[in-house]
Image 1: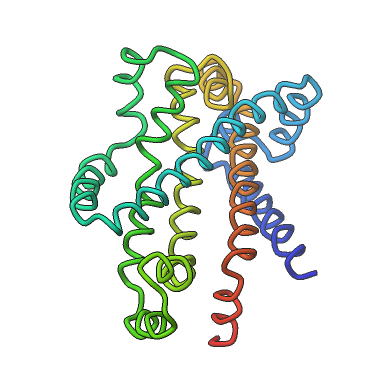
Image 2: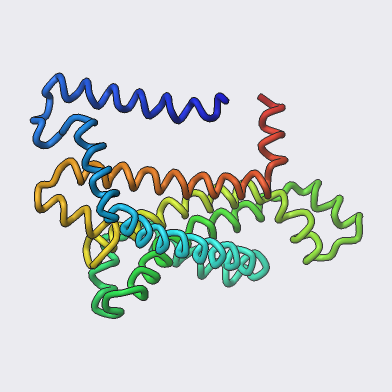
Length: 254
C-alpha cells in the first residue's frame, strides 16, 4: 500500500509546487502554463494518437538499445577480466569516450551512417556501453579473497569461480551499472531524435518548441519522465529477481 501511495504523493506534491509557481507569476504563464493546461494538452495528444506513437518509437529504440548495450558491456567486462591486455585497451578507450555527450556524437555519425536505425544504434552503443562494462570489471576485481579461497577449496576452477562465486557477488554492482546505462540509452535516443530524427519524442519536442506549443512541450517532458520511470521499474524487477538476496541483506543491516 505504501509503495502505491508514494508515487501518488510525489505527483501530488509536484502538481502543488507547479501550481504555486504559476500563481506566484515567477514566469509568464505563456511559458509556464497551469498544470491543468499541460494535462489537457497531453490528453489531446493522446486522443489524436500522437503521444502513443511517439512513445512507441522512442521507447522501442531505447529499450532495444539498452538491452543490447548492457549485454555487450557485461560481455566485454567478463572477457576483459580474463584478459588483462584487453582490459587495458578497453579501459583506455572508455576513459576517452565515456565523457563524450550524445549531442557531440550525432553530427559526425550522420555523415558516416546517414539517418535511420544505424545512427541510433551507433550513438546508443558508443555512449552507453561503458557503465555496464566498467561496473562489471570493477565488481569482478573486487571479489573478496575469502570467497575465492572457499571456492578453490570446493574444487572450482577459474570458470567455476567466475560463475559460482565472482559473478553472483558482483551482480549488485553490475546491475547498478545496468540501471545507469538504461537511463543514458533513453537520453541518447532522444538527443539523436532532436538533432536528426524524423519521428519520436525528441523530434516532436523540437517541433513543438519551435512552434511555441508550450503546454504540449511540457506534456511530452512528463511523458519522457514516465517512460524513463517505466524502464527503471523494469530494471528494478530484474534486480530483485537476480540479486534479491542483496536487497534483503541491506534491509537486515538497516
